[in-house]
Amino acid sequence: MQYSPFLSGLMGVCVGDALGVPVEFNSRSDCQEKPITTMVGYGTYHQPAGTWSDDSSLTFCLAESLCNGYNLHEIAKAFCKWIYEGYWTPYGNAFDIGGTTYRAISRLREGVEPIAAGGTDIRDNGNGSLMRILPLAYGYKSLEFPELIKRVHDCSRLTHGHPRSQMACGIYISIAVGLLQGMDIKTAYIEGLKAVEAIYTKPPFKSELPEFKRVWTGEIESLPENAIASDGYVVHTLEASLWCLLKTSSYAEAVLTAVNLGSDTDTTGAVTGGLAGIYYGFEQIPSEWVKAIARREDIIDLANRLAKATENS
Image (cartoon, rainbow, N blue to C red; front, side, top):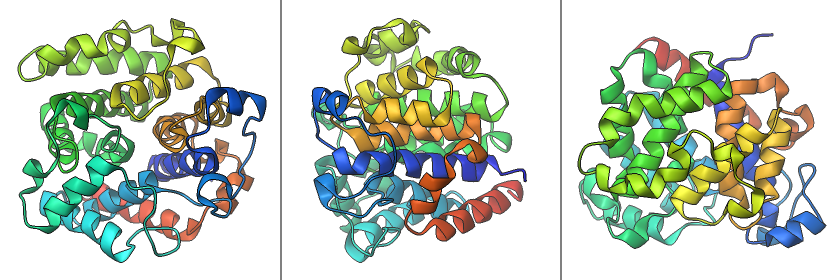
């Protein structure tokens, strides 16, 4: 059976997220001493195996909204429903909510315009928009590339408005587009950087380029593991996800490498898993991991609806 890249990406995010949930905040040394090798439960949040966090919830909220077309106000409504009504959560309630994301969604609830809701302070560069941005990549066939990246930036701004966060999302989506076009991982990485170069060598992004210098070399995988951070800073999450993807040769190896870096395990797993899912395909995600995922059939249905909506746009 041929599975769609929509399901591969969405489930790729979710499985990577769920693998990391039980060990979030564990140190790298703890993860190396007792590594995650399969889907387990409980741990940090005392949740059953297959439970996904805010990373997947917000990814699914975005995907659900895109089923009815691109509308920032509708995306904002979905994010508010997630926090306040348990929308697109595994078991009816939101948990593991980042502070920057919570504050931004509170502003959305108060009626602040979506592109003005996300924090713009230098300290607002957590990974909360990068972790959920993948569904926008599927619009690459129907949009001119600059318009696609503008949508990525604007969607980031719902929760993370600083140019650095927008850039991280844009680089990630540009690489995802290359994978969707059939490129191998290394080629998608290099071509993805080339595709956004004209955008990011101009204000307001040009001054942020030094923050991405290790990504921009096109050789992030050459760094040793001890040079790769896996905390909640958006640039570190982008670096770690690309490093894991480029250093491994299967979906399982990529996401387990990501999770076992420790610290922000669910998000590093989710961000890595989205790209790995697209590249390796749904059928290469271990079936026993997929079977454990909460609301698995709902996610499959969402992927099918997003595929239909995207193909008809």
